[in-house]
Length: 302
Ligand code: MN
Image 1 (spheres, rainbow, N blue to C red):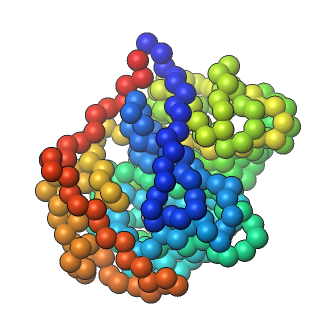
Image 2: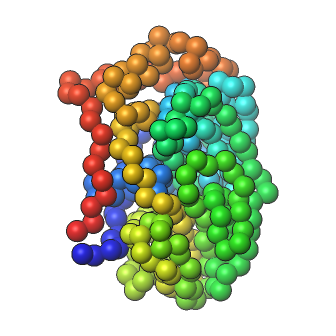
């Protein structure tokens, strides 16, 4: 059995994000989750002014992780938070029982470019009250030929000190020149390496920009070889054993729960309080499908 695989992105056009093309690598047909990382959208570089205009929408049962390579996004939410993010800072929103937020790119000259990630909350924590964290003082260090910005979890004696509910890792890796780095890994974690730019090979596999190279548990190190300036995002985590049900912006466990979450949003229940932003658009939930929603299966990389 192969224990690593390169996943090609799916191109997604979001009606709510005019002008930005999304490359989605999680969830993938073969790989549903990497640790508790369950969603990975990679976008840009693209002109800011038309890039992102995501009006108010709800989340449950997950954390959203917003990380930029360039540009600026304004986050507002139903708890009253109003927080811009820039490259090097992290917006982490723990939806728990429920929150609504909007994400709007700002109108200036710098391209918008980054990743939007979701983390599934374990059953024990998925209904906690929502909260929001902004982190602008994250670990930045060099390891062999890579500059590492750690935004989630602990790695190489550094700790991002952000609130997480399972063993997880998230980091941006930059190489300014040709180089080979053997990065130490936790053999109890599985990993994904998203290539953003550059000529990169991972354990000898050439991985083109937009693709995600997955490593199963059991690896003690990985070889990252870069030619010229390159950027990657490294995700890792202890395999998430719970079966989750992802539908629209919700994560639950059963069809009935998802129906309830959807109805709470559609009926403007107090679960998702109203808030103001520059556009004041509320995105309606899609219709439920005619079939019962069932949890996704496990990763399979045969
Ligand atoms: Mn969102």
